[in-house]
Amino acid sequence: MMEYTKSILPGDSYAPGGFTKFLWWLSTAEQALIEKAVVDRNRYAITGMTVMGTWLFATLAWAYFFSTVVSNIWAPMLLGIFMGAVILGIDRALIKGINRNNKHKLIPISFRVLLAITIGLFMAQPALLYLFNKEIHTQISIDNEQRKMSKLQKQNSVYMSIKQPLLIERNKLQSQLIAKDKEVSVARESFIAETDGTGGSKKIGLKDIAKAKQQAYQILAADYIALEQTLTPSIRSADSSLKNIDAGILKEQAAFETLLNDGFITRIEALNNLIKNNGSVAFRYYLLVAILMLIELMPVIAKTLLPSGTYDEHVKLREAYELKSLQQLYQKATVDLLKD
Image (cartoon, rainbow, N blue to C red):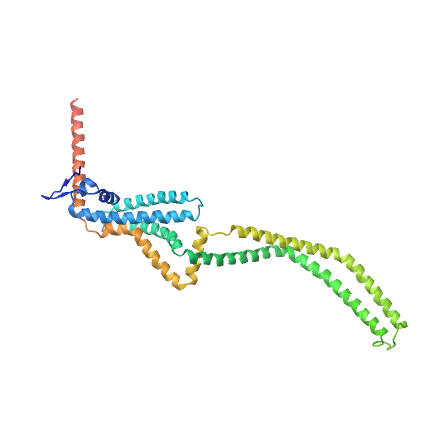
């Protein structure tokens, strides 16, 4: 059966529904007292609506945040509900402390606004990541390529102290072979020119001068072969060492690429880079931050801006009545104890 609560005004009765009672609970209003405050019923229902909006927003924002770091589908939902309940508790505590006596005092209101802004700023991040999801993933691919290039440059810089002596030694050995090969080439061309009559004595055929140049060429060719046999193992060893170093760099680079991801921090960095490089995105970003922060601030704003009605007076008088009753109870108990 529906129960009606009588107001202090004659002829007024009111039967709040379950949803209205829930809104009152969200706004931290005492049901027994708010039912008697006719005008304040709607005010506290409005405050409850703002708390409910913040609560739902916090739950969704935190659930999305956890979905970026947890692969299991149920964990983000449960964690989002838990963190939403925490934010709900904080918001109810914030608005519970705002009453007729302190709603116009700067220090308590400033503290509550600062706390709400802090929470709102953090909760805005997951929401913004969701809203700019496509643009952020595009920026992540660009950022990851830059990270790979930076990693490769650092690796080359680290290994350069090892590669440099090997490169110098290999180039030195190769220079010796090239110089010797040039000597052989010059001797061969001189010998050929002497035999075909285009150089030297201008005599065609294998004459004495040609034989002498042939012998010199053959000696140089033999020296080149001997030098090549001596230096080639050292050159190959240097090449092998350089190849192993390059293979190690590539292996480290591949391992580094497996660490690249699109987690929460990576997305935040991509969002920051996107804002830095794109003016239109930056404008909408700050606009959305302001809107999302207002969602968290709305319970405090609503409780502060809405005028105080008879409910606060009911609370004040009820507290005074309970305090007086408690004092009388203790006084009576003390008297009875002294009589005994």
